[in-house]
Image (cartoon, rainbow, N blue to C red; front, top):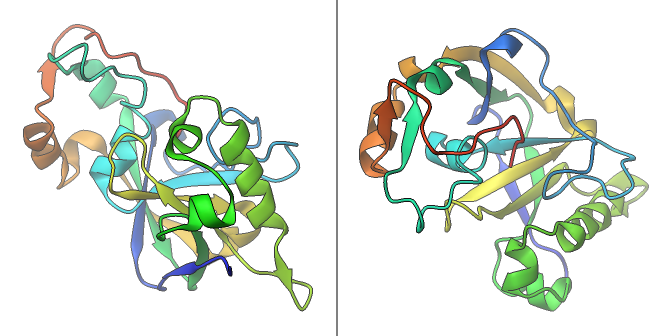
Length: 207
């Protein structure tokens, strides 16, 4: 079974949620091993991106919130004001290993849904390493992986390997409150905006 690929064409726009302190800074490719498709041996770096704002938010700002246990779904206004959305343009076509394709996780990698969605990232990081190592004619096969969003299923997220960093560029840093998709996200996901800190656990971990 060949591993299917997914292409994101040059000209498309991806989104990354960050802190306002990082406005105008270079995109950060992490290798600390704390995220789902990080390098298990920390020998390469990964950037996490959403194909839309809700997925980027659910996989970063809201990724630890227990939606079933806490139906209030509130976030402090100061937390909103501390965030910006990095509009990341694709300069050259991206070729991603498509982990959302039917049969891939079980047939190719031998993983089940529990292993794929677990908070223990052992299995998914091993997948990342396998994909990163795949080559053809001594050239890397993939720029990263397209994988199912744990917190905004069935949407998909992107884990981009640092070796593809020349294929993307930040075109704008947009304050979250000014993002055109923010009001709809608040309405569709029933988010309450509180003047004081809300119950959602927030941190800087991405995806």
